[in-house]
Amino acid sequence: MTIPFPADFLWGAATSAYQIEGSRTADHTGLSVWDTFTRRPGVIEGGGDGSIACDSYQRWREDVSLLTTMGLNAYRFSTGWSRVMPDGTGGANPLALDHYDRQVDALLEAGITPFVTLNHWDMPQALMTGEDDGGWLARSTAEAFAEYADAVTARLGDRVSRWITQCEPWIVQLLGYQLGLHAPGIADVARSVIAGHHVLLGHGLAAEVIAANVPDPQVGVASSLFPCVPATDTEPDRAAAHASDGYVNRWYLDPLAGKGYPTDTRELWEGVLARRGAGFTLDDVILDGDEGIIGRRLDFIGVNYYTRRVCAAASGGDFPWKVVGPTGDVARSDEGWEIAPRAFTDLLLRLDRDYDHRPLVVTENGAVFGDGPTHDGKVHDNRRIAFLRDHLEALAEAMSQGVTVLGYLHWSLLDNFEWALGYRPRFGLTYVDYRTGERIPKDSARYYGQVARTGRIPAADPAIPAFG
Ligand code: FCB
Figure (cartoon, rainbow, N blue to C red):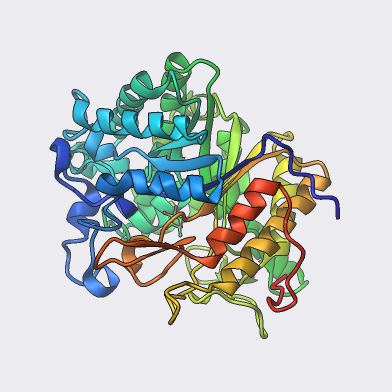
Protein backbone atom coordinates (compact mmCIF):
# COMPACT_ATOMS: atom_id res chain seq x y z
CA MET A 1 0.00 0.00 0.00
CA THR A 2 1.28 3.53 -0.74
CA ILE A 3 1.36 5.37 2.53
CA PRO A 4 -0.34 8.68 1.85
CA PHE A 5 0.67 10.76 4.87
CA PRO A 6 1.39 14.29 3.66
CA ALA A 7 4.41 16.23 4.96
CA ASP A 8 2.20 18.54 7.02
CA PHE A 9 0.28 15.67 8.66
CA LEU A 10 -0.17 16.32 12.38
CA TRP A 11 1.26 13.51 14.49
CA GLY A 12 0.39 14.00 18.10
CA ALA A 13 -0.82 12.70 21.42
CA ALA A 14 -3.71 13.74 23.64
CA THR A 15 -4.39 14.33 27.33
CA SER A 16 -6.91 16.22 29.45
CA ALA A 17 -6.53 18.55 32.41
CA TYR A 18 -8.29 16.63 35.19
CA GLN A 19 -6.67 13.35 34.15
CA ILE A 20 -3.06 14.56 34.32
CA GLU A 21 -2.64 17.87 36.13
CA GLY A 22 -3.14 17.34 39.87
CA SER A 23 -2.60 20.57 41.94
CA ARG A 24 -6.34 20.95 42.24
CA THR A 25 -6.25 24.12 44.31
CA ALA A 26 -3.18 25.83 42.79
CA ASP A 27 -3.51 29.31 41.33
CA HIS A 28 -7.03 29.86 42.70
CA THR A 29 -8.48 26.89 40.82
CA GLY A 30 -12.15 26.39 41.63
CA LEU A 31 -13.81 23.12 42.55
CA SER A 32 -14.85 21.02 39.57
CA VAL A 33 -17.59 18.43 39.38
CA TRP A 34 -14.89 15.74 39.31
CA ASP A 35 -13.37 17.03 42.57
CA THR A 36 -16.72 16.54 44.26
CA PHE A 37 -17.79 13.37 42.46
CA THR A 38 -14.60 11.48 43.37
CA ARG A 39 -15.40 12.07 47.06
CA ARG A 40 -18.48 9.84 46.86
CA PRO A 41 -17.62 6.46 48.34
CA GLY A 42 -17.29 3.63 45.84
CA VAL A 43 -17.58 5.58 42.58
CA ILE A 44 -13.90 5.31 41.58
CA GLU A 45 -12.23 1.93 41.23
CA GLY A 46 -9.47 1.84 43.82
CA GLY A 47 -10.79 5.07 45.36
CA GLY A 48 -8.42 7.45 43.54
CA ASP A 49 -8.96 11.01 42.41
CA GLY A 50 -7.18 13.70 40.40
CA SER A 51 -5.47 15.46 43.29
CA ILE A 52 -1.99 14.41 42.14
CA ALA A 53 -2.50 12.38 38.93
CA CYS A 54 0.62 12.85 36.75
CA ASP A 55 1.45 16.12 38.52
CA SER A 56 1.47 17.77 35.10
CA TYR A 57 0.41 21.18 36.37
CA GLN A 58 3.93 21.29 37.84
CA ARG A 59 5.77 18.95 35.47
CA TRP A 60 4.29 20.14 32.17
CA ARG A 61 7.72 21.03 30.78
CA GLU A 62 8.69 17.37 31.07
CA ASP A 63 5.57 16.49 29.12
CA VAL A 64 6.59 18.90 26.35
CA SER A 65 10.01 17.19 26.32
CA LEU A 66 8.32 13.81 25.90
CA LEU A 67 6.63 15.15 22.77
CA THR A 68 9.82 16.64 21.35
CA THR A 69 11.86 13.50 22.09
CA MET A 70 9.32 11.46 20.16
CA GLY A 71 9.39 13.98 17.33
CA LEU A 72 5.66 14.69 17.46
CA ASN A 73 4.36 17.92 15.95
CA ALA A 74 0.97 18.20 17.67
CA TYR A 75 -0.41 18.03 21.20
CA ARG A 76 -4.03 17.96 22.31
CA PHE A 77 -4.54 19.09 25.90
CA SER A 78 -7.40 20.77 27.71
CA THR A 79 -7.59 23.96 29.68
CA GLY A 80 -9.13 23.31 33.08
CA TRP A 81 -12.62 24.82 33.00
CA SER A 82 -12.83 25.19 36.77
CA ARG A 83 -9.30 26.62 36.87
CA VAL A 84 -10.14 29.35 34.38
CA MET A 85 -13.67 30.01 35.68
CA PRO A 86 -13.55 29.18 39.40
CA ASP A 87 -17.06 30.54 39.99
CA GLY A 88 -18.57 29.26 36.76
CA THR A 89 -19.36 32.74 35.44
CA GLY A 90 -18.30 36.30 36.07
CA GLY A 91 -14.62 36.66 35.45
CA ALA A 92 -11.71 34.50 34.44
CA ASN A 93 -8.79 33.61 36.69
CA PRO A 94 -5.69 35.30 35.24
CA LEU A 95 -3.25 32.91 36.99
CA ALA A 96 -4.75 29.91 35.23
CA LEU A 97 -4.66 31.72 31.90
CA ASP A 98 -0.99 32.64 32.54
CA HIS A 99 -0.24 28.97 33.07
CA TYR A 100 -1.75 27.86 29.76
CA ASP A 101 -0.21 30.86 28.02
CA ARG A 102 3.26 29.67 29.04
CA GLN A 103 2.45 26.14 27.95
CA VAL A 104 1.30 27.30 24.51
CA ASP A 105 4.45 29.37 24.03
CA ALA A 106 6.65 26.41 24.97
CA LEU A 107 4.82 24.14 22.55
CA LEU A 108 5.11 26.62 19.71
CA GLU A 109 8.80 27.13 20.42
CA ALA A 110 9.22 23.38 20.15
CA GLY A 111 7.41 23.34 16.80
CA ILE A 112 4.34 21.59 18.22
CA THR A 113 0.86 22.59 17.06
CA PRO A 114 -1.55 22.86 20.01
CA PHE A 115 -5.09 21.50 19.82
CA VAL A 116 -6.87 22.95 22.83
CA THR A 117 -9.97 21.24 24.22
CA LEU A 118 -12.22 23.56 26.21
CA ASN A 119 -14.49 21.05 27.92
CA HIS A 120 -12.87 17.80 28.88
CA TRP A 121 -15.45 17.29 31.64
CA ASP A 122 -14.04 19.36 34.55
CA MET A 123 -17.01 21.72 34.78
CA PRO A 124 -16.97 24.22 37.67
CA GLN A 125 -19.00 22.83 40.58
CA ALA A 126 -20.52 26.31 40.86
CA LEU A 127 -22.57 25.55 37.73
CA MET A 128 -24.36 22.68 39.49
CA THR A 129 -26.59 24.97 41.51
CA GLY A 130 -28.38 26.74 38.69
CA GLU A 131 -31.90 26.25 37.37
CA ASP A 132 -33.16 22.65 36.87
CA ASP A 133 -30.35 21.14 38.97
CA GLY A 134 -27.66 22.85 36.99
CA GLY A 135 -24.80 21.41 35.02
CA TRP A 136 -25.71 20.58 31.45
CA LEU A 137 -29.35 20.18 32.50
CA ALA A 138 -29.51 23.96 32.68
CA ARG A 139 -29.67 25.85 29.40
CA SER A 140 -27.73 28.68 31.05
CA THR A 141 -24.69 26.38 31.21
CA ALA A 142 -24.32 26.62 27.42
CA GLU A 143 -23.94 30.38 27.89
CA ALA A 144 -21.52 29.97 30.80
CA PHE A 145 -19.48 27.69 28.55
CA ALA A 146 -19.36 30.33 25.83
CA GLU A 147 -18.18 32.86 28.45
CA TYR A 148 -15.34 30.51 29.37
CA ALA A 149 -14.53 29.89 25.68
CA ASP A 150 -14.35 33.64 25.24
CA ALA A 151 -11.89 34.05 28.12
CA VAL A 152 -9.56 31.31 26.87
CA THR A 153 -9.64 32.20 23.19
CA ALA A 154 -9.26 35.93 23.85
CA ARG A 155 -6.02 35.06 25.65
CA LEU A 156 -4.62 32.25 23.46
CA GLY A 157 -6.37 32.79 20.15
CA ASP A 158 -3.56 34.87 18.65
CA ARG A 159 -1.37 31.75 18.78
CA VAL A 160 -3.77 28.80 18.82
CA SER A 161 -6.01 28.23 15.82
CA ARG A 162 -7.25 24.66 16.46
CA TRP A 163 -10.01 24.37 19.06
CA ILE A 164 -12.06 21.45 20.29
CA THR A 165 -15.09 22.81 22.10
CA GLN A 166 -16.58 19.64 23.57
CA CYS A 167 -15.13 16.21 24.24
CA GLU A 168 -17.58 13.37 23.57
CA PRO A 169 -21.07 14.83 23.98
CA TRP A 170 -22.60 11.33 24.03
CA ILE A 171 -20.32 10.14 26.83
CA VAL A 172 -21.12 13.25 28.88
CA GLN A 173 -24.83 12.57 28.43
CA LEU A 174 -24.60 8.81 28.95
CA LEU A 175 -22.18 8.48 31.84
CA GLY A 176 -22.77 11.84 33.53
CA TYR A 177 -26.56 12.16 33.31
CA GLN A 178 -28.10 8.84 32.19
CA LEU A 179 -26.13 6.24 34.17
CA GLY A 180 -24.51 8.42 36.84
CA LEU A 181 -21.12 6.72 36.45
CA HIS A 182 -19.24 9.98 35.79
CA ALA A 183 -19.57 13.43 37.35
CA PRO A 184 -21.99 14.91 38.17
CA GLY A 185 -23.41 11.44 38.87
CA ILE A 186 -27.02 11.93 37.78
CA ALA A 187 -28.93 8.82 36.65
CA ASP A 188 -32.02 10.01 34.79
CA VAL A 189 -32.50 8.60 31.32
CA ALA A 190 -35.25 11.02 30.31
CA ARG A 191 -33.52 14.20 31.37
CA SER A 192 -30.16 13.05 30.02
CA VAL A 193 -31.37 14.07 26.57
CA ILE A 194 -31.64 17.65 27.86
CA ALA A 195 -28.02 17.56 28.99
CA GLY A 196 -26.85 16.24 25.62
CA HIS A 197 -28.69 19.00 23.78
CA HIS A 198 -27.15 21.70 25.94
CA VAL A 199 -23.66 20.29 25.35
CA LEU A 200 -24.25 20.69 21.61
CA LEU A 201 -25.77 24.13 22.09
CA GLY A 202 -22.65 25.06 24.08
CA HIS A 203 -20.55 24.05 21.09
CA GLY A 204 -22.55 26.34 18.79
CA LEU A 205 -22.36 29.33 21.11
CA ALA A 206 -18.66 28.77 21.78
CA ALA A 207 -17.87 28.33 18.07
CA GLU A 208 -19.25 31.79 17.40
CA VAL A 209 -17.15 33.34 20.16
CA ILE A 210 -14.03 31.51 18.97
CA ALA A 211 -14.55 32.76 15.44
CA ALA A 212 -14.64 36.32 16.79
CA ASN A 213 -11.40 35.91 18.78
CA VAL A 214 -9.26 33.73 16.53
CA PRO A 215 -7.97 34.60 13.09
CA ASP A 216 -8.51 31.68 10.70
CA PRO A 217 -9.99 29.36 13.35
CA GLN A 218 -10.48 25.64 13.01
CA VAL A 219 -13.19 24.48 15.38
CA GLY A 220 -14.31 20.92 16.00
CA VAL A 221 -15.84 18.54 18.52
CA ALA A 222 -14.11 15.34 19.61
CA SER A 223 -16.91 12.82 19.08
CA SER A 224 -16.92 9.32 20.55
CA LEU A 225 -17.77 7.30 17.47
CA PHE A 226 -18.63 3.62 17.67
CA PRO A 227 -19.46 1.85 14.41
CA CYS A 228 -22.62 -0.18 15.13
CA VAL A 229 -22.75 -3.48 13.28
CA PRO A 230 -25.51 -6.12 13.30
CA ALA A 231 -24.81 -9.35 15.19
CA THR A 232 -26.37 -11.36 12.35
CA ASP A 233 -27.30 -10.49 8.82
CA THR A 234 -31.01 -10.45 9.59
CA GLU A 235 -33.47 -7.60 9.24
CA PRO A 236 -34.17 -7.21 13.00
CA ASP A 237 -30.44 -7.04 13.84
CA ARG A 238 -29.74 -4.65 10.97
CA ALA A 239 -32.54 -2.38 12.21
CA ALA A 240 -31.16 -2.62 15.76
CA ALA A 241 -27.68 -1.59 14.58
CA HIS A 242 -29.09 1.34 12.61
CA ALA A 243 -31.12 2.55 15.60
CA SER A 244 -28.10 2.22 17.86
CA ASP A 245 -26.01 4.18 15.36
CA GLY A 246 -28.58 6.97 15.58
CA TYR A 247 -28.45 7.00 19.38
CA VAL A 248 -24.63 6.90 19.62
CA ASN A 249 -23.35 8.68 16.52
CA ARG A 250 -25.88 10.47 14.31
CA TRP A 251 -27.75 12.20 17.16
CA TYR A 252 -24.65 14.33 17.70
CA LEU A 253 -22.91 14.38 14.31
CA ASP A 254 -25.94 15.30 12.22
CA PRO A 255 -26.82 18.53 14.04
CA LEU A 256 -23.14 19.46 14.41
CA ALA A 257 -22.75 19.08 10.65
CA GLY A 258 -25.77 21.33 10.05
CA LYS A 259 -28.27 18.59 9.17
CA GLY A 260 -30.45 18.89 12.26
CA TYR A 261 -31.34 16.02 14.57
CA PRO A 262 -32.09 12.71 12.76
CA THR A 263 -35.78 11.86 12.60
CA ASP A 264 -35.50 8.20 13.61
CA THR A 265 -33.58 9.00 16.81
CA ARG A 266 -35.93 11.89 17.57
CA GLU A 267 -38.81 9.40 17.52
CA LEU A 268 -36.82 7.01 19.67
CA TRP A 269 -36.24 9.68 22.33
CA GLU A 270 -39.86 10.89 22.19
CA GLY A 271 -40.85 7.27 22.88
CA VAL A 272 -38.52 7.10 25.88
CA LEU A 273 -39.90 10.38 27.27
CA ALA A 274 -43.53 9.24 26.84
CA ARG A 275 -42.94 5.79 28.36
CA ARG A 276 -41.14 7.27 31.32
CA GLY A 277 -43.80 9.94 31.88
CA ALA A 278 -41.10 12.61 31.65
CA GLY A 279 -43.59 15.48 31.53
CA PHE A 280 -41.80 17.18 28.66
CA THR A 281 -41.17 16.59 24.96
CA LEU A 282 -38.19 17.35 22.77
CA ASP A 283 -39.95 20.47 21.53
CA ASP A 284 -39.70 21.87 25.05
CA VAL A 285 -35.93 21.33 25.00
CA ILE A 286 -34.82 21.86 21.41
CA LEU A 287 -36.07 25.39 20.86
CA ASP A 288 -36.59 27.08 17.51
CA GLY A 289 -33.25 28.15 16.16
CA ASP A 290 -31.17 25.79 18.31
CA GLU A 291 -30.27 23.46 15.46
CA GLY A 292 -29.11 26.48 13.47
CA ILE A 293 -26.80 27.51 16.33
CA ILE A 294 -25.42 23.98 16.77
CA GLY A 295 -24.73 23.58 13.06
CA ARG A 296 -23.14 26.95 12.61
CA ARG A 297 -19.51 25.91 12.46
CA LEU A 298 -17.65 22.60 12.31
CA ASP A 299 -14.34 22.94 10.47
CA PHE A 300 -13.32 19.37 11.18
CA ILE A 301 -14.88 16.26 12.66
CA GLY A 302 -12.87 15.04 15.64
CA VAL A 303 -12.92 11.25 15.66
CA ASN A 304 -12.43 9.39 18.94
CA TYR A 305 -12.27 5.74 17.97
CA TYR A 306 -11.70 2.83 20.35
CA THR A 307 -13.89 -0.09 19.32
CA ARG A 308 -17.14 -1.09 17.63
CA ARG A 309 -20.55 -2.13 18.95
CA VAL A 310 -22.10 -5.39 17.80
CA CYS A 311 -25.87 -5.01 18.19
CA ALA A 312 -28.79 -7.43 18.27
CA ALA A 313 -32.51 -6.67 18.31
CA ALA A 314 -34.08 -6.45 21.77
CA SER A 315 -37.45 -5.50 23.16
CA GLY A 316 -38.92 -4.45 26.46
CA GLY A 317 -36.43 -1.73 27.42
CA ASP A 318 -35.99 1.92 26.49
CA PHE A 319 -33.95 1.09 23.41
CA PRO A 320 -34.63 -1.60 20.77
CA TRP A 321 -31.17 -3.16 20.77
CA LYS A 322 -28.66 -4.79 23.03
CA VAL A 323 -24.91 -4.64 22.65
CA VAL A 324 -23.84 -8.28 22.46
CA GLY A 325 -20.18 -7.84 21.56
CA PRO A 326 -18.37 -9.99 19.05
CA THR A 327 -18.58 -13.73 19.42
CA GLY A 328 -15.57 -15.98 19.06
CA ASP A 329 -11.94 -15.45 19.75
CA VAL A 330 -11.28 -11.82 18.80
CA ALA A 331 -8.29 -9.69 19.81
CA ARG A 332 -8.97 -7.61 22.89
CA SER A 333 -7.17 -4.97 24.93
CA ASP A 334 -6.55 -5.57 28.63
CA GLU A 335 -9.85 -3.78 29.27
CA GLY A 336 -11.66 -6.43 27.19
CA TRP A 337 -12.50 -4.06 24.34
CA GLU A 338 -12.40 -5.66 20.91
CA ILE A 339 -9.50 -4.43 18.78
CA ALA A 340 -11.08 -3.72 15.40
CA PRO A 341 -8.88 -1.71 13.02
CA ARG A 342 -10.90 -2.55 9.90
CA ALA A 343 -13.95 -0.96 11.47
CA PHE A 344 -11.79 2.18 11.82
CA THR A 345 -11.25 2.34 8.04
CA ASP A 346 -14.98 1.81 7.47
CA LEU A 347 -15.83 4.55 9.96
CA LEU A 348 -13.54 7.10 8.29
CA LEU A 349 -14.92 6.25 4.83
CA ARG A 350 -18.45 6.57 6.12
CA LEU A 351 -17.84 9.94 7.80
CA ASP A 352 -16.30 11.26 4.60
CA ARG A 353 -19.29 10.07 2.58
CA ASP A 354 -22.06 11.14 4.95
CA TYR A 355 -20.66 14.50 6.01
CA ASP A 356 -19.69 16.16 2.73
CA HIS A 357 -16.00 15.27 2.69
CA ARG A 358 -15.40 17.47 5.70
CA PRO A 359 -11.80 17.15 6.99
CA LEU A 360 -11.33 14.66 9.81
CA VAL A 361 -8.89 14.72 12.71
CA VAL A 362 -8.40 11.57 14.77
CA THR A 363 -8.63 13.25 18.17
CA GLU A 364 -8.32 9.99 20.17
CA ASN A 365 -7.38 6.38 19.46
CA GLY A 366 -5.68 4.01 21.83
CA ALA A 367 -6.05 1.04 24.13
CA VAL A 368 -5.32 -0.29 27.61
CA PHE A 369 -2.28 -2.53 27.84
CA GLY A 370 -1.06 -2.98 31.37
CA ASP A 371 2.66 -3.42 30.67
CA GLY A 372 5.06 -1.95 33.22
CA PRO A 373 8.84 -1.74 33.56
CA THR A 374 10.71 -5.05 33.40
CA HIS A 375 14.14 -6.05 34.78
CA ASP A 376 15.89 -3.64 32.36
CA GLY A 377 13.76 -0.72 33.54
CA LYS A 378 12.06 -0.46 30.14
CA VAL A 379 8.45 -1.04 29.13
CA HIS A 380 8.21 -3.49 26.24
CA ASP A 381 4.61 -2.92 25.22
CA ASN A 382 4.58 -4.85 21.96
CA ARG A 383 0.81 -5.04 21.89
CA ARG A 384 0.49 -1.25 21.82
CA ILE A 385 2.97 -1.20 18.94
CA ALA A 386 0.80 -3.71 17.08
CA PHE A 387 -2.31 -1.68 17.92
CA LEU A 388 -0.69 1.50 16.59
CA ARG A 389 0.61 -0.15 13.46
CA ASP A 390 -2.74 -1.73 12.62
CA HIS A 391 -4.75 1.45 13.27
CA LEU A 392 -2.31 3.64 11.35
CA GLU A 393 -2.50 1.23 8.43
CA ALA A 394 -6.29 1.38 8.69
CA LEU A 395 -6.07 5.18 8.62
CA ALA A 396 -3.70 5.12 5.65
CA GLU A 397 -6.13 2.84 3.84
CA ALA A 398 -8.96 5.35 4.27
CA MET A 399 -6.68 8.19 3.14
CA SER A 400 -5.56 6.28 0.09
CA GLN A 401 -9.26 6.02 -0.80
CA GLY A 402 -9.52 9.80 -0.75
CA VAL A 403 -10.54 10.68 2.81
CA THR A 404 -9.02 13.92 4.12
CA VAL A 405 -7.49 13.34 7.56
CA LEU A 406 -5.43 16.20 8.96
CA GLY A 407 -3.88 14.47 11.94
CA TYR A 408 -3.75 11.58 14.38
CA LEU A 409 -3.62 12.26 18.13
CA HIS A 410 -2.98 9.11 20.12
CA TRP A 411 -4.70 8.65 23.47
CA SER A 412 -2.66 9.12 25.49
CA LEU A 413 0.72 10.78 25.92
CA LEU A 414 0.81 9.49 29.50
CA ASP A 415 -0.78 6.85 31.67
CA ASN A 416 -3.30 8.87 33.67
CA PHE A 417 -6.46 8.99 35.80
CA GLU A 418 -9.01 7.03 33.81
CA TRP A 419 -12.16 8.53 35.37
CA ALA A 420 -14.35 5.94 37.17
CA LEU A 421 -11.76 3.24 36.48
CA GLY A 422 -9.12 5.08 38.48
CA TYR A 423 -5.44 4.47 37.85
CA ARG A 424 -5.60 0.81 36.84
CA PRO A 425 -6.05 1.13 33.05
CA ARG A 426 -2.87 2.33 31.37
CA PHE A 427 -3.45 4.07 28.03
CA GLY A 428 -0.09 5.87 27.80
CA LEU A 429 2.77 5.92 25.34
CA THR A 430 4.64 6.88 28.50
CA TYR A 431 4.57 4.87 31.73
CA VAL A 432 3.95 6.95 34.85
CA ASP A 433 5.15 5.82 38.27
CA TYR A 434 2.39 7.36 40.37
CA ARG A 435 4.47 7.20 43.57
CA THR A 436 7.24 9.41 42.18
CA GLY A 437 5.80 11.04 39.06
CA GLU A 438 8.65 9.55 37.03
CA ARG A 439 7.88 9.19 33.31
CA ILE A 440 9.29 6.26 31.31
CA PRO A 441 8.65 6.33 27.56
CA LYS A 442 7.43 2.88 26.51
CA ASP A 443 8.72 1.03 23.44
CA SER A 444 5.52 2.19 21.71
CA ALA A 445 6.63 5.82 22.17
CA ARG A 446 9.81 5.06 20.24
CA TYR A 447 7.86 3.22 17.55
CA TYR A 448 5.31 6.02 17.20
CA GLY A 449 8.09 8.63 17.11
CA GLN A 450 9.65 6.79 14.20
CA VAL A 451 6.34 6.94 12.32
CA ALA A 452 5.96 10.64 13.10
CA ARG A 453 9.49 11.52 12.00
CA THR A 454 9.41 9.54 8.76
CA GLY A 455 5.72 9.63 7.79
CA ARG A 456 5.98 5.89 7.18
CA ILE A 457 4.65 2.92 9.09
CA PRO A 458 7.57 0.55 9.61
CA ALA A 459 7.14 -2.83 7.96
CA ALA A 460 5.41 -5.40 10.12
CA ASP A 461 7.73 -7.05 12.60
CA PRO A 462 6.91 -10.76 12.38
CA ALA A 463 7.44 -11.03 16.13
CA ILE A 464 4.46 -8.75 16.70
CA PRO A 465 1.27 -10.43 15.47
CA ALA A 466 -1.33 -8.33 13.68
CA PHE A 467 -4.73 -7.65 15.25
CA GLY A 468 -6.50 -6.66 12.05
C1 FCB B 1 -12.39 8.90 26.15
C2 FCB B 1 -12.09 10.13 26.96
C3 FCB B 1 -10.68 10.20 27.47
C4 FCB B 1 -10.23 8.85 27.97
C5 FCB B 1 -10.40 7.83 26.89
C6 FCB B 1 -9.88 6.46 27.24
O1 FCB B 1 -13.73 8.58 26.29
O2 FCB B 1 -12.32 11.26 26.17
O3 FCB B 1 -10.62 11.17 28.47
O4 FCB B 1 -10.94 8.52 29.09
O5 FCB B 1 -11.76 7.73 26.56
